[in-house]
Length: 179
Image (cartoon, rainbow, N blue to C red; front, top):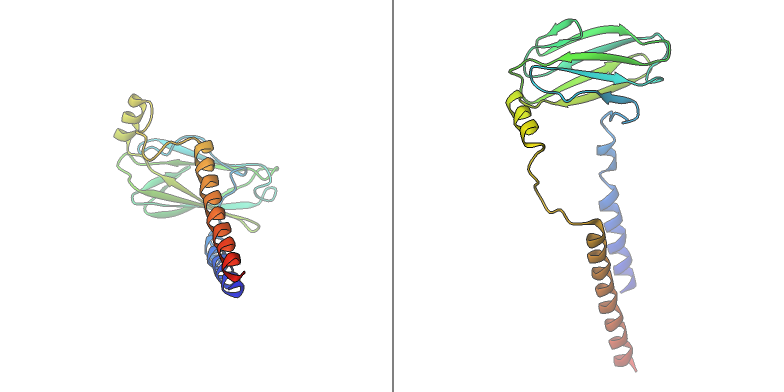
């Protein structure tokens, strides 16, 4: 019985950690290195700033923007994908302005690559009319269950205690049957 439990636990651990390499396959951007200064709203300009030491001092950074429609990347207009080369500052920081067309929809992907680093930022474009509605409503509608964390942890604790009680009862029953 112990071998079966151990094998089940091992399979559960393997199942939990088996997909970690897939999650690490994409170059995720560290929140401390990248700042999107304004919400990416259709018809407006989003500024993506990279903090100091994001790149080597004064190295060339190639920005590219990919999206559903033409966007302006700092001064260069993009039609689906275009690039802009810009030098990082002496501290390794850099920024780029992305002018989003008024009719843009979906996601825009902005990539910043240099000889030492590569970052990918996804801008989820909000339609101009939706942005106005959100501003008027002071936020989005709540979806899902808004339970306090204490209630969730309490319910999980009760569940674990119930499972422990069942295991103790089974163990005691087996000991009485063996005696």
